Length: 187
Image 1 (tube, rainbow, N blue to C red):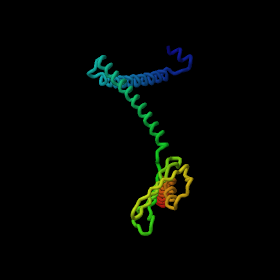
Image 2: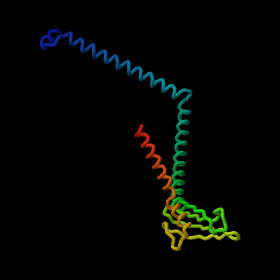
Image 3: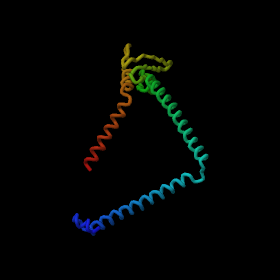
């Protein structure tokens, strides 16, 4: 056999070292596979602990039934959310209030103008005028942020507040963020 290696020009010692390295690699992979197999077997025994095939099948059937109920609940929730979104388009989601004294002899700002608008700035303005003897309530229709009848100064202010409802909060939040950013940059 050594004549074959001599004719090729390869030293038999190198071949033995290469084969020894290959054997060590194979032994390492066999040990690794054995450890993985024992871990998998341990997990399988833990999974099957106290269960035979029928109880395991029942467990799976219960889990699939739970999944089906969750899917039905998800569909019900989606329908409810879509209904809420649809209804939200027509509800009054913005408001503005302006309190004032309608007459010089009546104090306490008992009179008020209340603007109620939806997302498209369509809605109404209620104006309650209080005097010493009576209270009068006036209603004016608003379409896309405008009225077809003349509005009082208080009604205009209530309408402005309603149209800008939420924007003031956003601007305040933006101002706070800018101040925080400036403070962070200074540090």
